[in-house]
Amino acid sequence: MIWILIEILVYCLIGWLVCNIEPGKEYTWYSGIYHGIFFVINFIRSWFTDALYKAEIYTTAYNVFYWIFSILAVFSFFFGSRSSEKEQ
Image 1: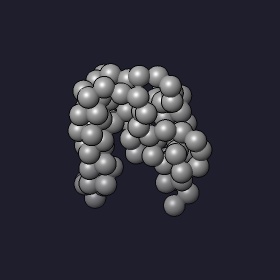
Image 2: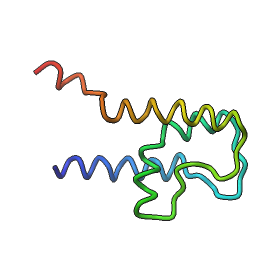
Image 3: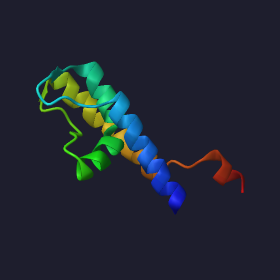
């Protein structure tokens, strides 16, 4: 249990360092991919801080790619498994 909490904290730190969303900036399709991949991490961060998990100002392409990669990230978070667990 403690390892899961440490892992979540490390992922939140990485999300803050690598993929922090600025409120007043407009984002395009490339950022939609990036923000979608970090959706789960930024969503967890938004519970405890004022972090955003989706940009407020964005293009249509951002929105499309954000949702595609957010769905993929959520599926991989819940249904993905580690290879070491499969071997046992």
